[in-house]
Amino acid sequence: MSISLERNSGLDLMRSVAILIVLLQHSLFVIPRNKTTQFLSEIFNFFDGVSIFFVLSGFLIGNILIKETILKKMDFVSLMIFWKRRWLRTIPSYYLILTIVLIISLFEKKQDLIIYVSYYTFLQNVIYELAAFYPEAWSLSIEEWFYFLFPIVILAFLKFGKQYQSLLFSVLVFILLALIFRLIALENDTAIDLRKSLIFRMDAIAFGVLFAYLKFKYESIFFEKKRVLFAFGILLILIISFCKYFCSTYFLIFFYSLEALSYGLMLPFIVNFNTKKIKKLNKIFFYFSTRSYLLYLTNLSLVIGIILPTLKKTLPIMNQNSLFFYLLFWVINIAIVEVIYHFFERPILVWRDKYVTHVT
Image (cartoon, rainbow, N blue to C red; front, side):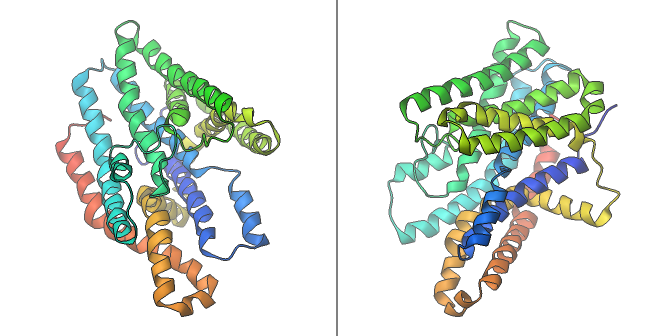
């Protein structure tokens, strides 16, 4: 049973759910805090949209790397093509929004130039998050460094082992290193924020690659047990989410790996889930899936951090209606994203697909 991942409606659904979780969490920042918003915040926190993105990214690039390592013989040329296609997908839009936020921020306050430079080199949160400036960028550095380092590790292992072994050993290296780094960090500082630091979280993406490997190697089992695996994934995420609050701080050493594992267990069911029969919902999933990256880039620092506060100052009447202000958050986000998507991101992707030789 072979399932195509190109425009897979199940993965569109998963990506849509991930970005909606992020947006719903952030949207609570624009309305007054009360018991209802506190309750909703706690409900949303049971599922981490960014971690879902990590696992999904790993699963998708894992399928690409499997074709290059197992079905072919990956070399430096194919690796360069992989990097070019990844970077053309992620970096231009990130640099655009980052630069807009930076220019506006420079008018408001001055900071050490090295902080801003680190955001362009994805070094802002190697161990610690450097500043509150453009906080959503923490996850992007984790993804970009994984895209860069993981194939290099595969190439290194290819010199000593077979294709299957090289991919699997590379996954295990990233998972084990993250566990070791988290253990060392908590031994030295139990207050450290493990969630947003580069060296502590790349295992989440590695778990996505692992499930891409399992799909390729054990495809029949992967899909035959999809409902059982999905149920177990849901159960696992609920259990560890409770444990995160009630167990020892040292549970965080394993929490982020178990969280990624739980989302990975849901993949067999989701990949095989067809939303095309529900045409209206499928259009919604397609929309949020194709705009998810831009929505992630714009919603917090640009819309919540800059645009909405500016509107509050210039139009005080807006402070009198929190519902209107909440709806404005969604309208402004979607409006900005539509402009960038059609006039910036989409043309770049079309150019990439035309001129950068495929590694898919």
